[in-house]
Length: 82
Image (cartoon, rainbow, N blue to C red; front, side, top):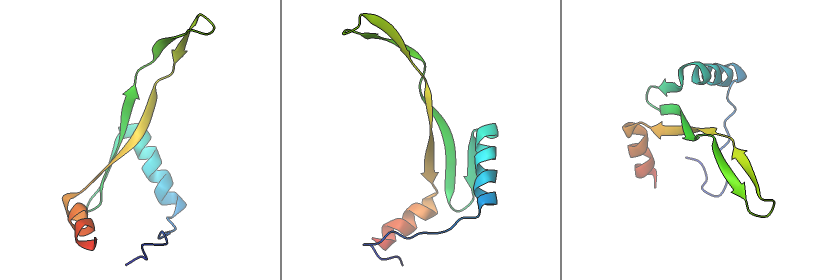
């Protein structure tokens, strides 16, 4: 078990992270059995806003973030660890 005062660091193979990233960008989600699911989630569409100081309209870009959902087994193990 890792020490609670110091974060555990695990070196992950670059090929593994590249493969996950590529699959996530092409398919939109990656499921790692026994661990969880990584998904891309569109958070906000492009929208227009008004700047009252300049009196101009500006557009705010859309953004996407990565969301992780752990499996039930992983959640249970984490709850037991506490």
